[in-house]
Image 1 (tube, rainbow, N blue to C red):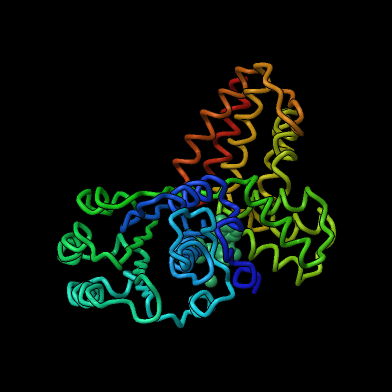
Image 2: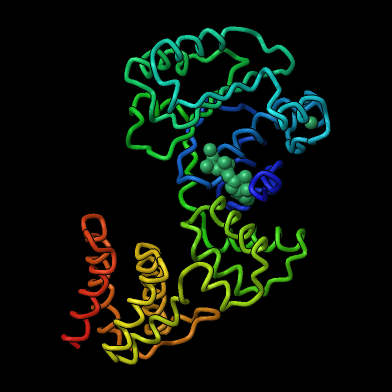
Length: 348
Ligand SMILES: Nc1ncnc2c1ncn2[C@@H]1O[C@H](COP(=O)(O)OP(=O)(O)O)[C@@H](O)[C@H]1O
Ligand SMILES: [Mg+2]
Ligand SMILES: [Zn+2]
């Protein structure tokens, strides 16, 4: 599986540029915070980063392992006993708990009890709590005291996709790192690296299209890349058919021609192919936003100028934003987009 084979194992191999720099600053600092909140959508590297952090502070060969005052050499070596056993999930000082299935007071109390024990094989015990927002109120209350005064040898990493469900009292005791959504350019970087290692020989557009369909998730992107390499998909047309889509540019190019019949036929075909309207509208909005910038004279690499006026683009954006909202309640997926298009043509 590509997503296991290519799970990042060092800070430097994280393709999430912002998070990477923050983690570097933290690991280089003289005094490490003991509690962290990793916030972000699925597949953005929260679990991977938590494990890398645990390795970095327990590695025997870097500045942490050598007790150097400077922490310039903070990367885990991935070769020492500690790194290897964290990589194989058999290190007893890295404790991963999934709060989706262990959310109650008893489980949290057990975890807290664990924090009072000295590390067994490493220097520090790292507690990684996934889906932390699922912890019950009682559980959070129990955890609060430990987070206020964590034992010197214990580190906590709470990972969550839902920041708003984490009590403020908990969040304020943690250093928050925002993983957000994966940026397309970062996803493309990652895909290219894997493509090279796997000798896939895809052209750049391939990676761009995959990134556009990965729901802003590194994991989803890696999965698509693996699927299409197994399916031996070689050209853009096959790729678009496989993904059940046509390129977003195609659709805007059809819209710009203002042929309502062709536009509706396109939507119908997209629908028949099982296309995802949420993704489609997101991509259109992104593209239209870029078009607004282009119309205002801002140069953007690789982007062509579509034949719609500034006012038309703004109008279309407004209609698509409405359609996007309506997607949540519509019984027919294609309908909000169809209505938006109908209105767009009537009024322009
Ligand atoms: N920052 C990243 N750089 C490169 N690949 C990543 C990154 N984040 C995630 N991935 C890919 O996605 C997979 C899942 O990542 P994971 O850390 O489990 O995400 P999360 O815990 O946020 O859901 C990884 O195994 C890797 O293949
Ligand atoms: Mg995870
Ligand atoms: Zn090591």
